[in-house]
Length: 621
Ligand code: ADP
Image (cartoon, rainbow, N blue to C red; front, side):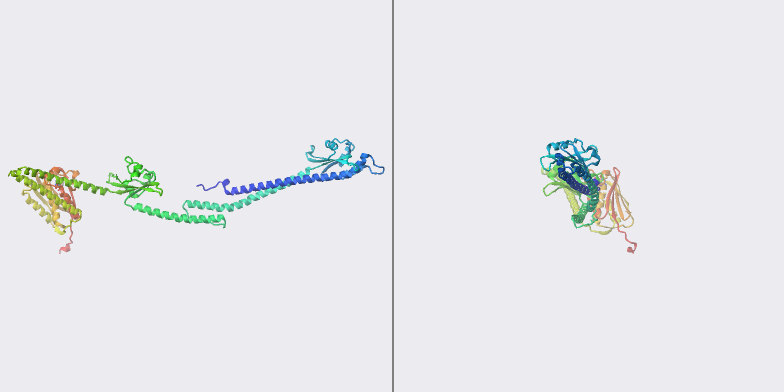
């Protein structure tokens, strides 16, 4: 916003301008009228005065002119012409230029102008005199004297005989200098113009003062409203007077307070909203009517791995990578949840996006809110569940199908064959055993999953426990189970007892399982090495074989439920693929860890680490 008002646009200038124009207008009107009236009045007065003088002269000269006309002047009486001349000689000054008395024969009888006495007795060649004589009427005329350029007033009037009013006995011609009247009027006008200019100058000054008194508070108010607009509510306007401007200033102060309060509550609200959005564990994206992102919270940015500045204004479908399968219209119509794969090279991430509309009271759509919920874990669990069901069904179907075919064969008459029947029955029994084992394993796992498998902890000597397990396998080498294998067991145990707090049966089960695998997956048996060592606060048991090994890619997976590197082989060995999964759960229940290292074709080593109890020396004493 522009702060500065150009001087010619300011109220100040306008007020001064209006006042001056009004004043000039008024002065002009009054002046013109006044001067005009004055001029008229003075000119009329002048003319009337001259007329009166002419009338006076007419009456005074009439007897002499009559006498002269009739030539009746008795001896001893005064000479009429001399009388007229003496009368005329008094008519000088006061604007009169010249008075002539002319007889009906147009001879000039006398003149008031002493310098012009030579014209007496001459014939007058004045046109107005002739005309007056002809019309027997007074003629008045204003004209400009070509010699001086002055205006002159001329009165020509016939004089009638004092005895016979119809008898014209002479003409009086009066020339007067009316210019002086005009000069006076011009002088008055001059004075008037001067005073007017002074008045205007004064009024400019006054108008300036008055308008400044008006504009100063207005300017302050403008400044204050600018400050309010810029968010500064601290200023207070000074109230100069109790008038409208004063009230306006009060209102602006009031407004400033109210805006400040409103702004404060908006800010507080925004902060609250911000903190809610920031601390939400879900991602939140809000868009405008056209689907352009206007808000995205921290979680949302983290989930989508984006920077705020880059996504603001971006289309939400583009942001979510849905622009190919979906249009904004469809999204608005359906508003159904969508699964979004936001997996990056670093982590797997599956998001559920729920959409809802922001609508005005009239139903007008203002924007969309999208909530992103991390469902990776849920999806993984769901996936595991599906896999589990499919695995279990598969694992059960295989022995059941095989059993069914044996039973069918028996049913079809094989039962009578003393050679085949016992073999078939043995196979069915083995399959049944395997199923029972598997179901027991599954039940065991499900108990662990449900947290119902409590450990019966006791302090045991792991060295002794491991030695015991190994000894048992020494014996088993000759048993029917491993009759085809010739393995030997090497021991690299610790000499001292290592005390661990364990559920001995379970740990034995784990070690059995690893030992069993070592034998199972070593075609020729070979040497199995059992080691023990202490690493920090952990005791690590390792069992190495010289078997077929496990491919690197499968090293982690062998601990998953039902996972087997070579399905057919493992099943042939009677494995269910649950042994290591259970072992892992059990070891972890003990706060330990299980892992494997392997070189394909050379052998595998399984490690189990458990925390051991470090007794203080004194406790033994
Ligand atoms: P199974 O009952 O099939 O043995 P486990 O959970 O005990 O199930 O083992 C999972 C898989 O790990 C086995 O099927 C096998 O492919 C592989 N495995 C386990 N131990 C060894 C080993 N010592 N050498 C080679 N492969 C092994």
